[in-house]
Length: 205
Image (cartoon, rainbow, N blue to C red; front, side, top):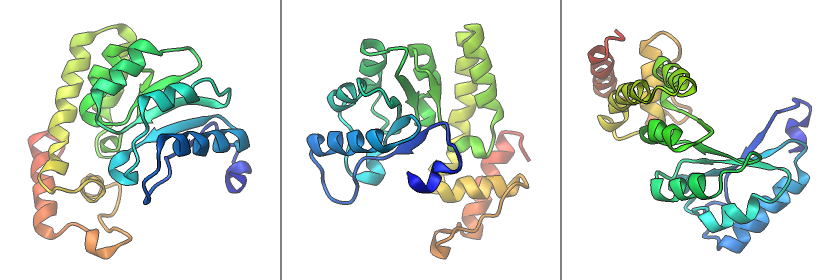
């Protein structure tokens, strides 16, 4: 927190404790301590596939009352829990944010306050169109944008990886390098070709 203070961030995002299993009370205390110390509003970030510790809806509800906690980015893929949160606990001071690209359109239609995308680093236009359609109340256009996002998601499905194909896709469109900091994670030539095939089907190449 102190390291980022000089940058005057609008928000700070924090995951639950990771590596070791943590009960919900420990996760609650973890976020309380961060929110107490933060000089800007805190966004809870639930991504159990990486932390191994899911943030239970009941814990998120407990944390909503903290004046320095502004919302939650949900990358769990658990749409049942997300919908329960949005429909049951949607307050002006707490934003429910979808972090799973497959669920973006449904989440906005449900009443989510925003989305955070990884795939958008490859092709951002469907997300821009979706956000505009949401503001206009155009459900059909939201679903059309979601269909494009689903098609783009194939760069992950064909490789079985997440960040490497996103970097490769951005590289193929002239905005990045495909190299990963851990060399063994960089896509092979065959995998890059699979990503390229998806982008060609979408008319991006």
